[in-house]
Image: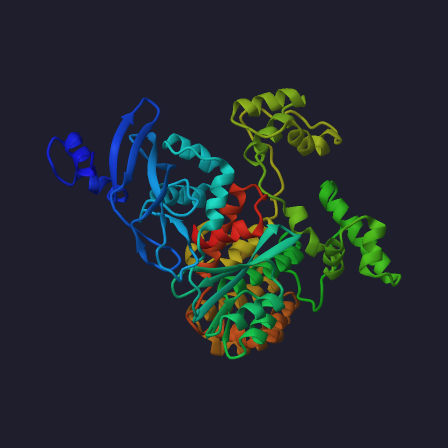
Length: 545
């Protein structure tokens, strides 16, 4: 029975119905078809009388032998399809050809050693690129394509990579295989948004070698990492380096946060603080200081005491049982308030919405922790009991207050804004501040000349960044030094060290936004494989997914 006859049986009239649905079966004649509840089987043989030798290309019709191949095909109606294909082995009659016999291949249906048809292999390859091994195998089974997770990964590794070609505008950024330990580099074509390559580390030599092997790059968009600057300079000395504007703004936000932590205490007094050059002395600890803040102070004192004795970073880390990166962070801090920015500020707690109620109930006389926990749990609290106990522990150490009538809130001293709140007020556009935030920012600037000068310079830098006025960069750096803002001096030093790239980033329209988006996609692919994927497999999925 031919393909058209099968089509006639299925459609009731002669036509090309089945050829359209299953075009890869056009070169064969279907002898028999069986459709069971769980499997569809087709028996077929090639319709051509001859085949071409793969070595010399000469056609031959002299049959040496016959055998049957079993091919898995794409599902029909949700059921797996198996093709029992009778193929022939031919003699090659060209006298100079070293190939004595050869097996025929049906174009569009078979290839050497393949057990799947091209439509099935393409479908499984797409599933593997999207979901990797285990999840891909589960989805394939639902779609009627039976395959193991290891087979899916082999299909991914067998796929050809993207064709190499020159990249005029290259985006470079790092990503973490394991955060804080092992990093790689992602390369993006900024003009098209396509992923170009994945490098196993973020070393300057690796990037330089890639650039030499792929000439033609004219512009390199990168972050502020010195290794990428050195690698771009060595591998493509004629390329224009562009520092990414988002990274510039993010770096500035980190310095603003440190300044807000140093001057947060100015907002507590009734009068404005007086400007003083140099780092401000660390304020004394509060009456009841959080455990994290106390530990931060102790470690800061221990690190600086050992460094004062002439010990290096590594011996200090060994003696205090800390990592070298942690010791460096404590050593770079001019005073402990820089480190207390997060320790005192902390992350939002699930307990925050219920704190006024807890204080009211505590002052009203209800000081049983389990009862208070049950009450706020009924109100929607989903945090732990330990968080409640830690929050009320300072109150338990104080003498009991007089009872407060129910329904009233006991008076409390006005609380200082958090460091991150102050940072947010300074860094956000004035049009995006609420009236209350705008009022608190105005009050903070009136109380602290340091914060006022800081907010002024941040606003000026924002105008340079958003308007791409790179010609104003040098004047802004001079204004920062003239305003005596020590918290921004390290930021301006970094700008001067990478001056050309920063100037280009604040002038040209190029951006690394496409790189950041692809880094997020890379993280998703990496997490799908739970960190167990080899670099080669991850690279294939990133470049082809």
